[in-house]
Image (cartoon, rainbow, N blue to C red; front, top):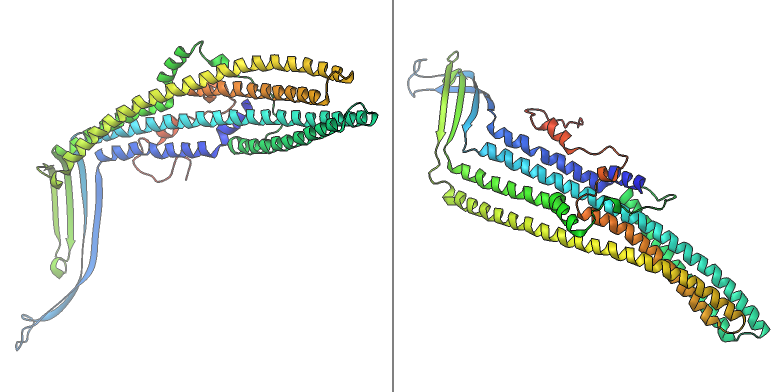
Length: 437
């Protein structure tokens, strides 16, 4: 199990694309910081100026002539924001909240993949065991049919007994083919989640040793650590920051602006150059902009904060419901295993007794077939319950928010989402990603 989950953690495409999405979200912080950084723009223009002037009936250069000169200009503008209503600060906070929320979404995806991996692993084990049980049942029924036909030749049983044995055998073959189909489906799911075909899977243990003693303690852990709850809380912070960002648009904006421009051959006059430079603060005061759109956006953002808070409360109720459900499934699986084990032992004793009684004519062939079918059903039930217990234990751990590679002690290099963030958060220039793309 550990090897399969380690493979899923490292290679699952769904998980890897979620990690790439988080790295893309990391870039929102540099984008927010850019609001407070200088903006430098250079400009230039070059062209040809052709002038022609004439006065009808008068000749002479004083009144007419042609001239052609190259003209152009170069300039630069530097703008540094000094105050923008704290929009930069709040944009950074909003971006950081979105990143923290995205990290929790990634953690939730990791838990889902690990839980799906454990489920697909146990499905293959269960279906492999069921195929073996049904194959062995065919072998037993073939021998039962042979003995019934022999006894029919001796006159000990009737043709009805032979027909019953034949019917049971054909039904067993049908169930065997269905079990094979289920196994193929489970193998396909295993390949999708884990990344390779199942090969010599070993029995897996439950993870109940990582679970608290009772449901109430599990709920406390889930409320504190479940990724969907944590993500919803960060979404509330992000929504609150968005209100402040929009409110900042109502404040005056102060920028320091430096502008320089050099004109060459002004008005087409060769050698005539002109310089212009302006340096100083620039204040912009919004009085009533965009027809009041900003006010509507602020009210909208405040309602979105309320929505985010309600969503966080909803996540808590959903997490608790899931945890209660999975905890109940685990307890049911435990009880079912005990019941199924007792049923298997009793069915084995009953089948042995029915076969002995049939040999002396106290039982019919149908009694033997029914006893054989009952034993098979109990064995399938036991295998299924054992699978359900392991899967339920992983589901409970996931519902608590603790189904992680670290808690399962998987032999993998754990993905650290902070590494990429630290690499790019303070970058001013550059188009290459940290991995060289």
